[in-house]
Length: 154
Length: 167
Image 1 (cartoon, one colour):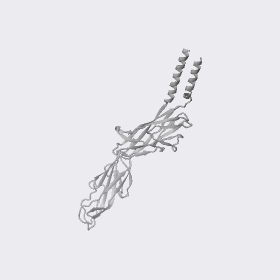
Image 2 (cartoon, rainbow over the protein chains, first blue to last red):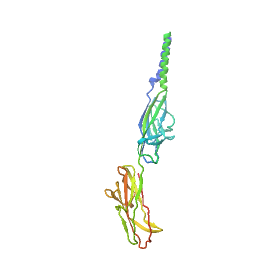
Image 3 (tube, rainbow over the protein chains, first blue to last red):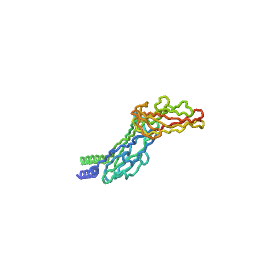
Image 4 (cartoon, chains in turn brown, cyan):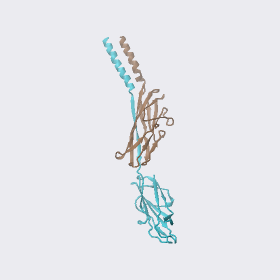
């Protein structure tokens, strides 16, 4: 009987954080859009560009930390499998706890980045980058997928 | 007692598994990166503006519609794209330091290789705007008048007309 009470107590202590946490989520909000490019002319999109920057919304338990990790493509793929070089710089990532594009903390999207969730348990991640079409770049539409992973630690 | 210990062990394992799943929480979200590349613009001088033989004191005009002697540029680029074009025009043709005045420039713009169905332009009034055809073509024809002075030395006179086109 004494052993059973111990077992019950242990179960409650360990399980409590599971029921107390809000679910974590990553939602793609806006594509990173370079618009119309000319062959041989690099085009930069800033993470502060409200219309063109890539944007994600993240959610997690308030007051806790999460780790962001991007999977970044090195090329966009276009007609007939043609590729267009895509690069990211050390400050092309941005995080806003208040979800305000005007109040970001810059970070290197090529590296993992630790964020702290606000009391609302949400935040916004912004992404800029540079597209570098070759002088002989084939005309057409190019696209790639950018994935953001969020891992949380209790 | 034995049964109670087994239950305790099972519960502990379940609890640890639950705790382990908390540590492993991770989710993904994706967006696209997109770009549209336009065709580069090419400008080719296809036919020279040729006045042939001229005589001192006798002006000569080549019309933009002169299929043999008018100047012609062919432009290619992104289909249906708006462009800006400009013509750099000489005021003289030259030969060994002698000048043969050239002016009264005329021009014609068309999306097909024809001097009908398009629109007349004033080359000296560029930059101006145009739109490439659905297939990405534009044709520019130019004509002008040379006015040889009566004392113009004999020779071969040349000048350069440059067409610049940009998106």
